Structures are given as structure tokens and as C-alpha cells.
Image (cartoon, rainbow, N blue to C red):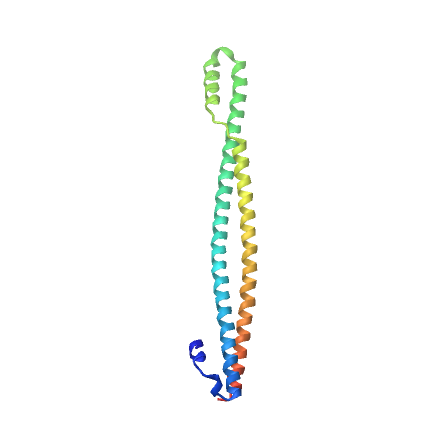
Length: 170
């Protein structure tokens, strides 16, 4: 359409036709620019939404790992406490329970302690991922506002075009 309009020799057309054609050229340029902006905004929104989804997935995974580690820590502590009480009971009956005491001590030594720093690190990572996700969510809202404003401009251009078409002298 642009190419077609640019091939028209405006100097041989009546002034009102020349003006209308010129207005159409300007309107086409404006609409083209706005469509490009809409496409760019939508592409950015899709990219940000994908990043948001990945951030939420990562947050969920880290939270699950932290919960699992917390459960393991509690189970290990409970097991350790039970064994410690058993040792006290068995020591009260020294002669017949020496073998049980030794077995329990060996079992205690074999328990792998849960690293509090690792748990804290996972919780911190989970919180950081949530902040990243919230930031991406805000960016998406801003891009959606740009897209909506651009769509309004396009609709205005369509309205102008319809008016030009209705009022065109040809």
C-alpha cells in the first residue's frame, strides 16, 4: 500500500485528493510503527512469562528440597534423641546391656548429621528466586500496559482511517 501511494504523482492530483493521499501515507506509517511496537511488546511479554514460569518452577523445586532436608534433619534428631534415652536406660542395667549400648553408640556415630548451612542456603535461594519471579511479574505488567496503550493508538489510527475513507473525495 505504501509503495502504491508513493508512486502517485501528487502534483497532478487535485489538492483535496493530494491531501487525502498524503494523510493516508502518514497514517500508514503510524500504523506500521504501532504494529511493530505491539509485536515487540508481545514478544517481550512471552519471553518474560517464560522466565517467570521457570523462576516459579525453580522456587518450587528449591522449596521442596528445603522441606525434604528439614524433614531429614528432624528425623535424624529424633532418632538421635531416642538412641540417647536408650543408652541411659541400658546403662542402668550395665552387665546385661553392654552389647546394646555399644550397638547404639555405633548406630549414633553412623548417623549423618544434617548441615544447617545447606538448609539455610536452600531457603535463601528459594527466597531469592521468589524475588526474581516478583520482579519479572512487575516487568510483564509494565509491558502489558505498553501493549494496551499501543493497541489504543492502533484503534485510533483505524478510526482516523475510516474517517479519511468516508470523507475522501474519490
